[in-house]
Length: 94
Image (tube, rainbow, N blue to C red):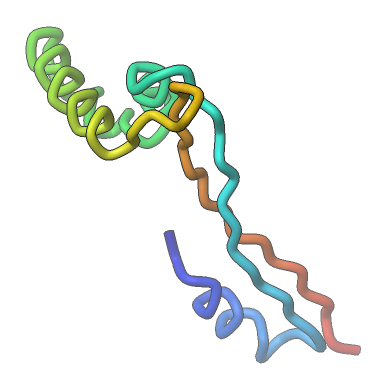
């Protein structure tokens, strides 16, 4: 994800005002498998698409194990998936 400063520098010379900020939404997920399912439809697609079914199964097993350790269960047993977003509000000059 590009830094907010990148967007500011891109827009500021052409705008009267630019506000840029980044935030993360924390989605409550049931378990590591739910996180893998969530990202499989978007961010993982370029990695999964070229794989055979056997390769895909091995990749997903290893990826799920990494998610398991990287996103520990919270006090209620759920996992929190940080989903970052950059917001930009620009007002044109003149």
